[in-house]
Amino acid sequence: VKDLFEQHVPHLYRFALRLTGDQNEAEDLSQAALLKAWKDRSRLRDAGAAKSWLFAITANLYRSGLRRKGREERFVSKIKNTEQVQRRALPPDKEIIVKEELRRALEAMDALPDRQREVLYLHACEGFSLQEIAEILAVSPDAVKSSLSLARKRMRQTLRDLVGTEDFSRVRETHLE
Amino acid sequence: MKQSSCDKLDDYMLGWLLPGEAAAFERHLADCPDCRRQCVLQKSIDGLLAEYGTLSDGNCSGLIERAGRQARTAWRQKAVRLALAIAAAAAVLTAAVFGRFALRSSAKPGGQDIAAAQNTAAESGKEASDSIPSRLENPQTSTLVALADPSKGIVLECKTNNPNINLVWIYPTVNTDAMPAGQSDE
Image 1 (tube, rainbow over the protein chains, first blue to last red):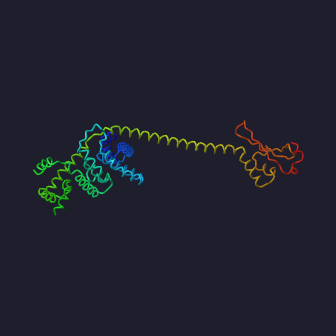
Image 2: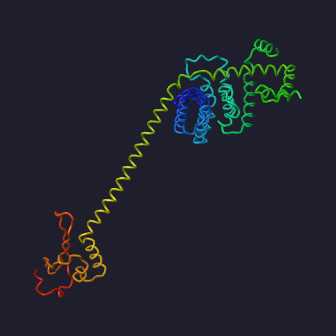
Image 3: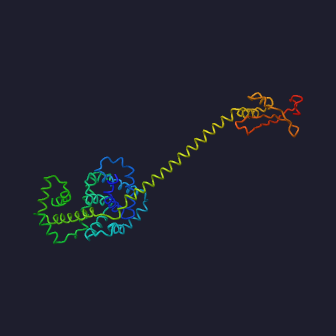
């Protein structure tokens, strides 16, 4: 089980980082998720579902943590949203070479509403299916579909200048072939 | 019509359209430069986000170990709490058993009868010399003594399990006239 968890830890940590926007909080959250997963390991019957199961635990812990925080704290965090977006967008490891485009894409993603951000991250970065995302976030597949469409549209609006004219012409040719 | 077709871009790219709808959208795509541009842009964004998903984060390398340590610490704390609870329960049980045993053993030689006699005498207000000897299993141990003052009392010797311990109960008498003659000097 430890090996099974170990291979998903980087993904889990990145998901926690995107949820919390803070490295320390992300470490605490993923650590708490691993601890809970270890305690409840008998409930995991299908090893293939370990990743989505770990993500569901992380999302649940994050939401219950948010509920524990009062409205006031949430209000303060909203005020600090801009700072958080900046910090969240930064890569957790300085050794990682992050392209400017990737940094911008992450910033745009972090500026999305919570649910849209979670859905987009799970779909685009982790490759989960709609059904898996619905299970992880405990929402209906239709809600996931709707959030994902909205998130993608908003991302395109924010990053409309991401692709240059040259790139567009080149890719258009290949696309239309 | 054009607007509704443009809105299907994400459904098309995500493969959510039926084959007929997808074919119709492809025809629309050939005539709509804005949709083509959006399509290219979305592919770029998807590529970047997918790339982020494959990056490795050095910070999380020790998370499993830390979680393991935390789990072990939590387990130890739980074990200590459980051990303390068991020890406390055992102590209470032992005290209860020994207490019951001590009560039973002290009641055997007549101590319980003496205590009962004492209570009865106190409640009824009868003279101790009348009530106590009749309730004792060993009445020959009762004697009458003269105290320093003019009053008198009854001395009851109580047997105990320990040979080094002797218990003597003294009941002062109330009616000196009822005493048998010749025993008032004992």
